[in-house]
Image 1 (spheres, rainbow, N blue to C red):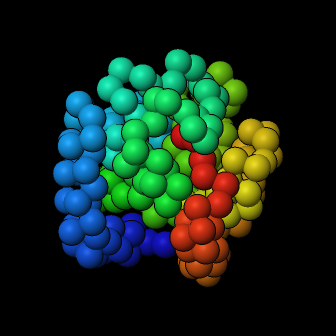
Image 2: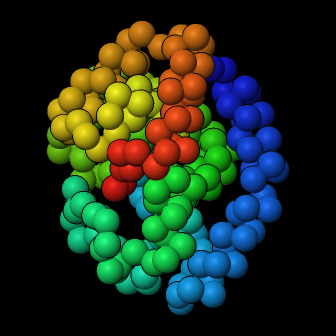
Length: 187
């Protein structure tokens, strides 16, 4: 999708979801100490680093130790509001701010962690030719049920075949798993 459309959708999403965002922020503050927002360094288009924003779902100071640390069901680090937000992916809503800032798109490969750069050739890898997305082809193909190499392959396929029609298909395919809380990603 054109970036102007992404920004419009992000602005509308933030406006429409603002009452729920406020309620989530209050619940986070009442449930545990720490900030409402979680900021994580990610790598986007052209290898540029940026802070990706999420609603905090874990207790302060209990971030995963390494890349690929799975946050499973019943993990004691996850807060009560965090359980619901992770299941529904509502913790990702602040990514819309990243879209407004021009750091992310609505649809694209998920932004890489800096530690993932060992896996990629930063210059010449297709995923770094486009803005990373809130949702993407790999997410709608299985989210956490697929292996890391499969996710990379699916993201590469998306970059080579992306069209507004495919983006709309991905958005549609995102709705059902998110509402059902299926295959929630530990990212």
